[in-house]
Length: 296
Figure 1: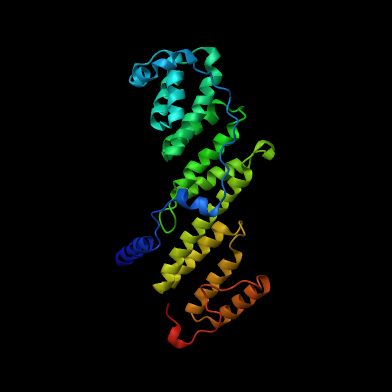
Figure 2: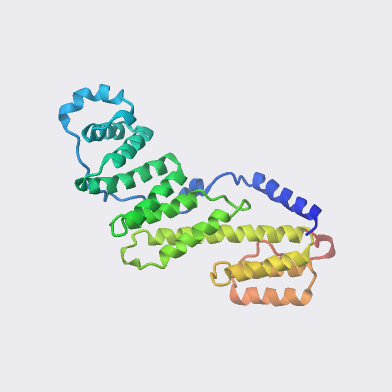
């Protein structure tokens, strides 16, 4: 590809991104496309703060969290922040509690707090921080009943942070690897397996649309050699998935029509009709093109 072609290609992707509103992330669209199960109420029991010091609530809230060293006071402060919905303050208190809880009796509490802080970051939309704590939880507590939930939310963090096509799909590829790793595990204790499978399918759809968009760009530039190369790449990448078999045949038909390859047009048309009789063409022409409509 020469320099001008590279510039034109980059400009086309930027323009297309603007027209299709690709600044939105999967965090916005998953609620529209895929039902996602949130955490069930399985958290381990928390230590309750004594009610005898509720009268000191105002004074307690006035103290910087970093100055609190008494675990009882910190637990009370956390209970207040939870009740009032002070998420960012609750995060600071949890971080302080985790740092100060060294007794073996506090291990169960710390384990629950590590998951809670991940959930709070997730609620704030701070997906990078949330993913970090979910990863730590999975690593530190591999035998926990909440491990499956933490793995699920770790994947969800990455999925929500993805960009829609035609934007960069690096994170989509990462999410795909995470879903593959999850689905390779034994399904017996995987409550979120069906949701992970849906996320995996959505990732494949995004990657396919990204590749398809590049293919169409080359076609519209009548750079058929580059289009053929991209088509081969699409086949190699998605032939084992079988989610886009009909679409791939249509792309082959579309390119054959642009190249006026009558023999290949007939072959691909017959193949689509035989394998996918109910499939409706959306890109390729359903009838032979005349000379006035050859260019797209």
